[in-house]
Image (cartoon, rainbow, N blue to C red; front, side):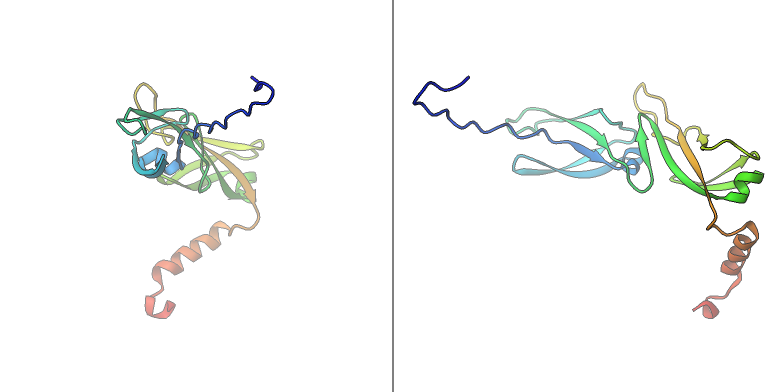
Length: 178
Protein backbone atom coordinates (compact mmCIF):
# COMPACT_ATOMS: atom_id res chain seq x y z
CA UNK A 1 0.00 0.00 0.00
CA UNK A 2 1.27 3.48 -0.71
CA UNK A 3 1.95 5.69 2.31
CA UNK A 4 -0.45 8.61 2.86
CA UNK A 5 0.74 11.96 1.51
CA UNK A 6 3.40 13.49 3.73
CA UNK A 7 4.18 10.27 5.56
CA UNK A 8 7.30 8.24 4.87
CA UNK A 9 6.92 4.52 4.67
CA UNK A 10 9.19 2.72 7.18
CA UNK A 11 11.96 0.57 5.73
CA UNK A 12 11.30 -3.11 6.27
CA UNK A 13 14.27 -5.46 6.04
CA UNK A 14 13.42 -8.33 3.64
CA UNK A 15 13.77 -11.75 5.24
CA UNK A 16 17.07 -13.52 4.66
CA UNK A 17 16.87 -16.27 2.04
CA UNK A 18 16.50 -19.73 3.45
CA UNK A 19 19.80 -21.63 3.51
CA UNK A 20 20.27 -24.24 0.80
CA UNK A 21 22.25 -27.47 1.19
CA UNK A 22 24.32 -27.67 -2.01
CA UNK A 23 26.02 -31.02 -2.71
CA UNK A 24 28.21 -32.48 -5.45
CA UNK A 25 27.16 -35.78 -7.06
CA UNK A 26 29.88 -37.63 -5.13
CA UNK A 27 28.60 -36.20 -1.83
CA UNK A 28 25.08 -37.30 -2.80
CA UNK A 29 26.34 -40.83 -3.55
CA UNK A 30 28.38 -41.44 -0.42
CA UNK A 31 27.13 -38.77 1.96
CA UNK A 32 29.23 -35.84 2.94
CA UNK A 33 29.85 -32.89 5.22
CA UNK A 34 28.93 -29.37 4.16
CA UNK A 35 29.30 -26.08 6.03
CA UNK A 36 26.42 -23.63 5.74
CA UNK A 37 25.71 -20.27 7.34
CA UNK A 38 22.45 -19.92 9.25
CA UNK A 39 22.13 -16.40 10.58
CA UNK A 40 25.36 -15.62 12.42
CA UNK A 41 26.21 -19.30 12.98
CA UNK A 42 28.08 -21.74 10.75
CA UNK A 43 26.80 -25.32 10.89
CA UNK A 44 28.50 -28.51 9.75
CA UNK A 45 25.82 -30.64 8.09
CA UNK A 46 26.30 -34.39 7.57
CA UNK A 47 24.15 -35.43 4.60
CA UNK A 48 23.19 -39.10 4.33
CA UNK A 49 23.96 -41.12 1.17
CA UNK A 50 21.29 -41.09 -1.51
CA UNK A 51 19.72 -37.66 -0.97
CA UNK A 52 18.21 -36.15 -4.09
CA UNK A 53 17.54 -32.63 -5.31
CA UNK A 54 14.35 -31.40 -3.67
CA UNK A 55 14.73 -33.55 -0.53
CA UNK A 56 14.69 -31.68 2.75
CA UNK A 57 17.03 -32.30 5.66
CA UNK A 58 15.65 -31.44 9.10
CA UNK A 59 17.98 -29.80 11.61
CA UNK A 60 16.56 -29.81 15.11
CA UNK A 61 16.79 -26.55 17.06
CA UNK A 62 18.93 -24.93 14.35
CA UNK A 63 16.65 -22.05 13.35
CA UNK A 64 17.48 -18.60 14.76
CA UNK A 65 14.31 -18.76 16.90
CA UNK A 66 15.32 -22.17 18.33
CA UNK A 67 12.92 -24.21 16.19
CA UNK A 68 13.61 -26.86 13.57
CA UNK A 69 15.05 -25.86 10.23
CA UNK A 70 14.26 -27.64 6.94
CA UNK A 71 17.10 -27.37 4.43
CA UNK A 72 16.23 -28.03 0.78
CA UNK A 73 18.90 -30.05 -1.08
CA UNK A 74 20.38 -29.05 -4.43
CA UNK A 75 22.85 -31.29 -6.28
CA UNK A 76 25.03 -29.37 -8.72
CA UNK A 77 27.09 -31.00 -11.51
CA UNK A 78 30.78 -31.51 -10.70
CA UNK A 79 33.73 -33.60 -11.89
CA UNK A 80 31.96 -34.67 -15.08
CA UNK A 81 28.93 -36.07 -13.22
CA UNK A 82 25.42 -34.67 -13.17
CA UNK A 83 22.30 -35.92 -11.42
CA UNK A 84 18.66 -36.08 -12.49
CA UNK A 85 16.37 -37.74 -9.98
CA UNK A 86 18.30 -40.80 -8.81
CA UNK A 87 20.24 -41.25 -12.06
CA UNK A 88 23.79 -40.11 -12.78
CA UNK A 89 25.05 -38.93 -16.17
CA UNK A 90 28.59 -38.74 -17.51
CA UNK A 91 30.49 -38.61 -20.81
CA UNK A 92 33.32 -40.96 -21.85
CA UNK A 93 35.68 -40.66 -24.83
CA UNK A 94 36.09 -43.74 -27.05
CA UNK A 95 38.35 -44.16 -30.12
CA UNK A 96 36.49 -43.60 -33.40
CA UNK A 97 37.67 -47.02 -34.63
CA UNK A 98 35.96 -48.67 -31.64
CA UNK A 99 32.73 -46.78 -32.36
CA UNK A 100 32.83 -48.00 -35.99
CA UNK A 101 33.96 -51.61 -35.45
CA UNK A 102 32.55 -52.34 -32.00
CA UNK A 103 34.33 -54.24 -29.27
CA UNK A 104 34.96 -54.21 -25.54
CA UNK A 105 35.51 -50.89 -23.81
CA UNK A 106 36.44 -50.04 -20.24
CA UNK A 107 34.85 -47.03 -18.58
CA UNK A 108 36.23 -45.40 -15.43
CA UNK A 109 33.20 -44.62 -13.27
CA UNK A 110 32.87 -43.32 -9.72
CA UNK A 111 32.51 -46.98 -8.67
CA UNK A 112 35.71 -48.09 -10.43
CA UNK A 113 36.46 -49.60 -13.83
CA UNK A 114 33.47 -51.11 -15.66
CA UNK A 115 33.51 -53.06 -18.94
CA UNK A 116 30.93 -52.98 -21.69
CA UNK A 117 30.56 -54.15 -25.27
CA UNK A 118 29.79 -51.98 -28.27
CA UNK A 119 28.20 -53.33 -31.42
CA UNK A 120 29.40 -52.01 -34.78
CA UNK A 121 27.87 -48.84 -36.26
CA UNK A 122 25.69 -47.78 -33.32
CA UNK A 123 23.56 -44.71 -34.07
CA UNK A 124 24.83 -41.46 -32.52
CA UNK A 125 24.48 -40.45 -29.73
CA UNK A 126 25.59 -43.72 -28.13
CA UNK A 127 24.47 -44.09 -24.51
CA UNK A 128 25.07 -46.99 -22.14
CA UNK A 129 23.04 -47.73 -19.04
CA UNK A 130 24.86 -49.23 -16.08
CA UNK A 131 22.19 -50.43 -13.66
CA UNK A 132 22.46 -49.67 -9.98
CA UNK A 133 25.41 -47.27 -10.29
CA UNK A 134 23.36 -44.12 -9.71
CA UNK A 135 22.39 -42.67 -6.35
CA UNK A 136 21.90 -45.35 -3.70
CA UNK A 137 18.42 -46.36 -2.56
CA UNK A 138 16.99 -44.17 0.18
CA UNK A 139 13.63 -44.66 1.86
CA UNK A 140 11.07 -45.71 -0.73
CA UNK A 141 13.24 -44.57 -3.65
CA UNK A 142 15.14 -47.30 -5.50
CA UNK A 143 18.78 -47.05 -6.51
CA UNK A 144 19.40 -45.06 -9.67
CA UNK A 145 21.37 -45.94 -12.80
CA UNK A 146 24.46 -44.46 -14.44
CA UNK A 147 24.02 -43.30 -18.03
CA UNK A 148 27.26 -42.94 -20.00
CA UNK A 149 27.27 -40.95 -23.24
CA UNK A 150 30.07 -42.19 -25.51
CA UNK A 151 31.87 -39.63 -27.66
CA UNK A 152 34.16 -40.55 -30.53
CA UNK A 153 37.68 -39.19 -30.18
CA UNK A 154 40.60 -39.38 -32.59
CA UNK A 155 43.11 -38.31 -29.89
CA UNK A 156 43.01 -41.53 -27.89
CA UNK A 157 45.76 -44.16 -28.35
CA UNK A 158 44.95 -47.33 -30.25
CA UNK A 159 44.50 -50.61 -28.38
CA UNK A 160 48.07 -51.68 -29.20
CA UNK A 161 49.51 -48.33 -28.02
CA UNK A 162 47.49 -48.57 -24.82
CA UNK A 163 48.77 -52.09 -24.13
CA UNK A 164 52.36 -50.93 -24.76
CA UNK A 165 51.92 -48.02 -22.34
CA UNK A 166 50.48 -50.28 -19.63
CA UNK A 167 53.25 -52.86 -20.16
CA UNK A 168 55.92 -50.16 -19.92
CA UNK A 169 54.38 -48.73 -16.75
CA UNK A 170 54.32 -52.13 -15.04
CA UNK A 171 57.69 -53.48 -16.15
CA UNK A 172 59.90 -50.37 -16.11
CA UNK A 173 61.94 -50.29 -12.90
CA UNK A 174 61.45 -47.07 -10.93
CA UNK A 175 65.18 -46.31 -10.91
CA UNK A 176 65.16 -46.23 -14.74
CA UNK A 177 61.88 -44.30 -14.97
CA UNK A 178 63.22 -41.56 -12.66
